[in-house]
Image (cartoon, rainbow, N blue to C red; front, side, top):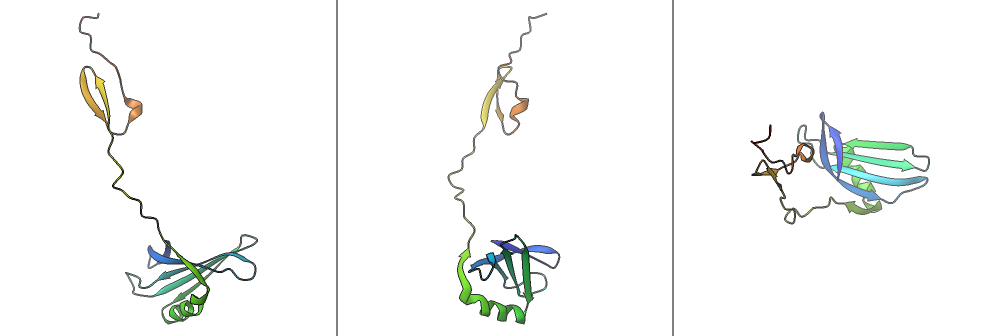
Length: 123
């Protein structure tokens, strides 16, 4: 999933990988159907050539729709974001003993004082 900068913010887009032509190594097309702020349709083609030079072509509204129709035949696949399964992640707290009281450490492991015992009779 890519992002396009429009109206002072980055907006999530649909990203397509295109078949590279001529001396290009990577070609990607980002498509924003409607900007949430201004309502424009934005298409941005990003290409990287053999010498690591980046070229960007950006079209808006009617020209963007025509540009997308023209490039649809070169689309290889759509790049999709991976959905991680959050069900399998558990919550683990490190239980430790400080002065005979059981406590839980949530994040700061470096400040633990594990195994301390309070001794009232030591002078």
